[in-house]
Length: 187
Image (cartoon, rainbow, N blue to C red):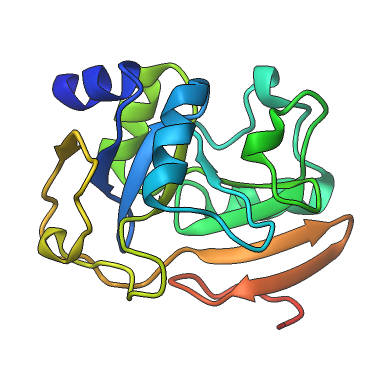
């Protein structure tokens, strides 16, 4: 835990186990770390990153509380494998947002990740630890590790990603099916 926190504090990339997949992780408050992540896992098509939160609420420094429907989903499923895509709060750095000015947020079910987030004192940016176009990794030996400062082996994971849900007011749209079943409009 201490080594992972130190790697992240230096702005380096760590591969860590999450709910179902291994992911690249960097501190969201360190622009140089995000640049490093972008260099090994480029984002295309206006996609944003996933922000991991230590607690099942958006920290005040990162914007206002979640809207009613998003807050209800978070209360029901966080910590856990639900990623909410919500309007980006004012002041959120543009590099953390998707092209449509949204942000994806999750409070992970992994106790290790939540403890690491608390130790880091800032949200982490997360994305699966695979090369673009390859299957997301369920085992550490399936990860692309070039450019990574630390990799933590959590054994074989489920292979299921988080369920990705966009919430806009009372409208709920499932963007990616995953480990959690959520009622909503399918893509």
